[in-house]
Structures are given as C-alpha cells and as structure tokens.
Image (cartoon, rainbow, N blue to C red):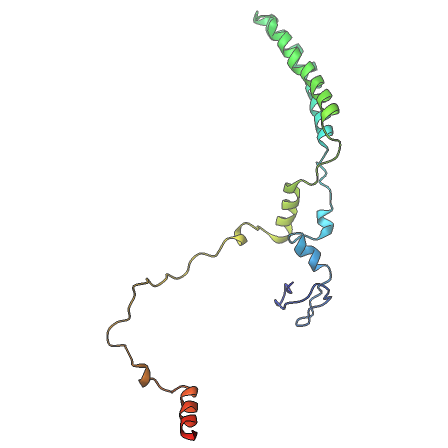
Length: 180
C-alpha cells in the first residue's frame, strides 16, 4: 500500500506514514472499497426494496388503477358505441393482471432486499470525489513520436573516440595496463 499524500510504500499495519505523517488508519478499507469509506457503503438506499415488495407494490397499483381506468373505458364504450369486449379486456388486464402480479411476487420472488443500488453508491462517489470517468482516461497526447526511419542531418556525426571527457573506466583500464 502507498501513502496517498507522498507515495511512500508502507505495509498494511502502518498507522502513520513515516515520511509525511499522514494518518493511515482505515486507509486499507477505503482502498479496498474503491475509494469510499465503509460507513458510506453500509448506508442503505432508501428506495431499495426486496423484489417481493416491489412486485406487491406493482400489483397493487395495477388493481387500484383499474378502479379509475375501467369506468373511463365504460364511458368511452357507451359514448362512442364501441364493442363491449374492450371493457372486458380492460378489466382483465388491469384488475386480474394486478392480482396475478401480486400472486407471482408472493410465490416466486425473494423477500431479501437487493444488495445495494450501484447508482446510489456511484452518486455518493461523485459527490465526494468528483467525476471519476474523466480521470480514468489517459491525458491527451502533447508530443508526436519521431518516425522509425529518422536520421539526423548530415554533418552532425561524431566519432565516439573524439568525445570529451573520456570515460572513467578508460583511465582505470590504462592504469591497470601500465601496472601489469
């Protein structure tokens, strides 16, 4: 693990950074949770509900909406001389569809709430840290690479023996040859 302030490499049990003194207690949990403290991740989304509860709510709304939709359709059938089968189909779809939705939720759907709504966590992350999408991309290119076939202009070539100063090992090698 590295200190977020100065970049010093630290082991997992370190309480303070030895270089800058940054408090490292709890940083392992923050890094392990993708940059969010455990307290924020443990918060429950107020809109999160179990699939069963959502299904019961949807079925109930369908049944209640039938109390409004069926009389409106009945008035339209009478007013425009439409076939009465439209009223029957509307009643079946709204009331009995809601009843079947409730029955399905009670029998097949889990009453355990979903783990967490990722949109809720992502909203908190953006509030605390800012927009993370822009920081995951590389910065734009600021220079252009030299082509592989590039050769320096004529007249700038030098013989490596003419370079000054000479290397340290060259003098040592000459001294060793004299002493032998």
